Image (cartoon, rainbow, N blue to C red):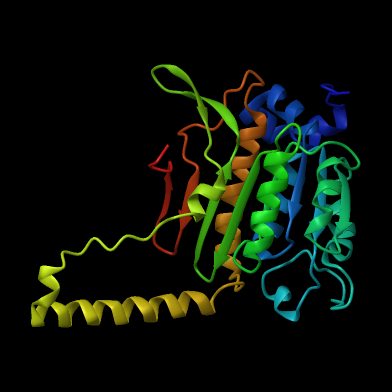
Length: 288
């Protein structure tokens, strides 16, 4: 049962943000339940911002054991790290200490097959945030499937970092995009972003020109080198990147939850966010 009442103590704690976004948004945050799957440096920033903002209920879940590299950017580990214990159980107490008004649960998943339990226990989840898509692409596909086939479908935000570069895919099911006109818009399934057919569009005749062919070969070598560098950074979360990109994603989540329940959702309809050390861009998938 939704509780729209904000106590006097809560008003004192959330006074600044209530002045910015109002009581109605704070009430929606209080009644929201978000699940964060994949506890790493990026999700630590998201969790911290959601908890301090007054999210009502938060479920932490992970299906792998931590490594000592987690300590480089994941500040949720406040005690001695155990590489044999699940991540979620190790960080849950510290997350609770950040805000006593937030109900924090942890789910130590043996594997991704336990995802349905995360979506329904102890109460239905309104939004899932998955932060290990680069390290576990098959888990990404499985979580995507579970959220889409759940009744009702659960919105999913998938985000990943590789060194100083990151991305997020917002699969928010359906919303109303407020422009000059109001129109019902459906978010495409994240699966469609992955299923891309590569087409060689270079004119065949031009490839026979020796100088041009040499230039293309050089560019291809540089591209391969760049890809190898990125591949080596998968799972590497620098603290500054986590802080900046994680805060941006937390604000996107707060905006999504805080909008009016008539279906008006985040502003510009962008469902793909790209982040690097130079620029942050937000785009809508051009096919939709």
